[in-house]
Length: 581
Image 1 (cartoon, one colour):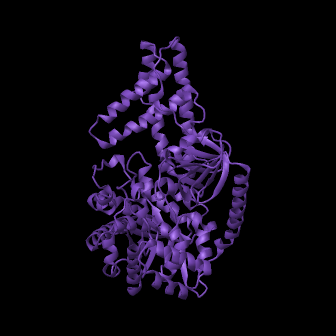
Image 2 (cartoon, rainbow, N blue to C red):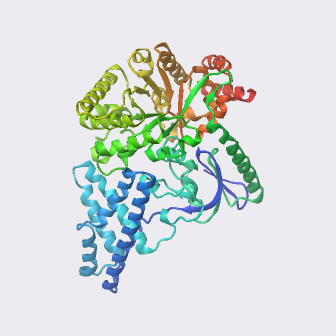
Image 3 (cartoon, rainbow, N blue to C red):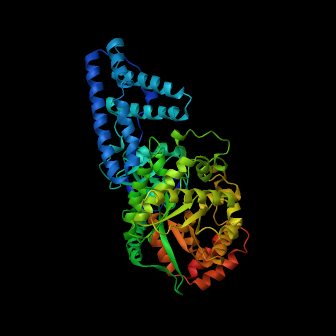
């Protein structure tokens, strides 16, 4: 939504998903849309052929540079996205037909690209295989790149960014993210997206300010506009007057001073005043994200989301490809724990090459451990890769979406099968691997006392636990007001899980958004949460909060809060407690 404070200053409000105040020029990312290009004939076909060949060469050159950059910074799996585009440009069924349209029918280079892309994409879309139908999007992406080079569209390519900017876009896809240069991108604003979307996760892992879901108001931001964004409050200010600039400059100075002071907590343990110690870990999606974790104060990786490896690959990642990724993370953490979550696909995360069925309620359907237990060979290959990586660090395995004892035992049996295979083959593996489950489904939380007898640990995924407990689609803006991890029912489930693990000598972690929220810290300390895993940018602040608390006071607070009736009352109680301590 927009708000006008004066005749020139404009304010837009979205969702603040990654804190930080940033001031800079807007870089509006509008990729060329093929449907907007009008068809035209060529006056000189020979000239059009030269233009097309030059655009193809430049496109391949750009893509090869991006592939190498992606390999070094994000790994082989994300580089595969761009490799696929290079292969299309070299495909005899894609490029030669463009040349024929120019030579035989005297179309312009732009029209030749437009017509060929439309035809090839249409062929893919008509195929029975879901995987092949999904390739239509890749064809259009390549066509958009070629068209951008042909029409000389300015401000469209992320590779054009060579100064500090705030990126403005409808959304950012995985193929966009491999092109982002953190040195220049101060933050970003998107039309769509929520607090738990993949774009929000990206912002947290990159540690840059982000405001998502601003809606149609994004159209008011023009390329080159001076823009202020606040990733905490979700505010965006265009054409700010002097008073507003001074206000935000002061807030930014205070924020920077606070960030500087927080660095001292990187080397400190998270221990309350009365000696209760917890482990602070980081959530990651690629092994490259381990860079700098130790310097930030992470004591391990509490959640390695392996689905990103699968989502960014053109085909199913092999066992060896997976092994290299998992080994990289284990070695980077230098003996500290790395909890690797097995494939959590489905819901809002799709794999075209798996040809998953369309479902009315995908979040309640064929996903995560349900899919893996059904596709044994896929699951066994991943388990073998993780177990092999355990020889290079303190690797732990976590199964997502467990709803009860049968699924846990079936998954554990396949783990044992993979382990015995490797032992029989003489492969070196870790001596002791902890195997646990994510608590995301209320049924698992209610069975925690039984499950705790068999699992090695629990990790509470609050993002899904909340939506399944209060029946709220966390991606649906219409009911977003109901999505709250301070809901009394959610807190009672969390207590059940922690109490069950304590009773049976096990431990409980948390890898959902709640773990990185300073407001939740006194409550989680009071409940006795053992391990907290969060985005890297939240680690130092959480350590600062925990070291200022007394567990005994937090335990009393937790007892009082669990008697309250609404999330608002619980938030008010936590706010008052932190103000007094």
